[in-house]
Length: 309
Image (tube, rainbow, N blue to C red; front, side):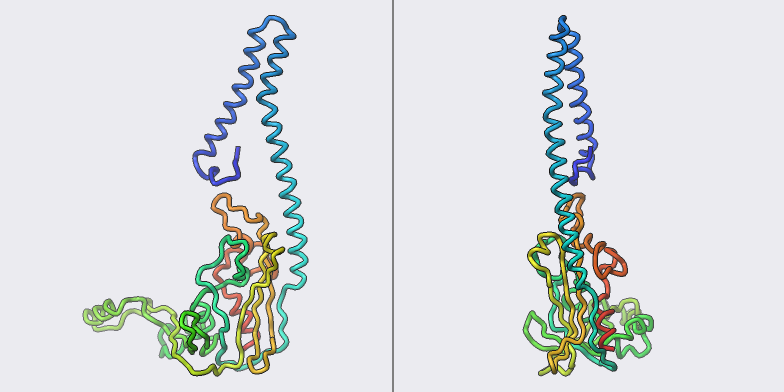
């Protein structure tokens, strides 16, 4: 007997099944005692019927309630699915024009560092959230100045931009970011390693990390921004919609936009430590290349580099 709760993942799920068997065993035992104890058949049958009714009626009422709840849930799912299908008619990529030889871009709006797992009404674009904080900028940068080191990583990031400009929301200042490999070791550890070995630390101890310098004004012409386009009705049906745009900052023209939606078919069910929004990635338009397992991914980078080459 599954409860549809996290109890099913514990030993208590089996215990509840045993309680159910004891319940019906007690009902049958009492009915048998009534048949054995009383002499007259009409009395035997009457008492046995009363005993069974006492046990059966609550179960029947509960079954009817569960069935009604299931019918309501199925109706909600059907309505949510119809709305999701309507939203998907406007989903997809619309590219007005592309631009070649783009060296840098402006990241106009920062994302939260943490992804949204189960907040139904937080308008932070769970569909498009494939990075957070400064990592979104790092995702757009290629690596430079490695002088032949970190060859595989440099090659992998070769199709990205030389610089990204943005306003850091923590201090409100403008910065230009460039791609660099930074050591993961502390300064003290690096110093000791070099003193002990006479060598620099291994390449495997470096990771991509953006370096930045303050600037008086942005030089990049094209900007990238995102928005949550979900309505209240969408979120009530566990549908999340997001848009990412590429904008010509000289003319304020939107030269490309990607719109996407996803829906949690569990309608927010959290049983068994389930997370609704990551599960919704299974049911998305356009679909993610790796399904729900594609997070974190590079959907933003893939789209933007189609437009700003």
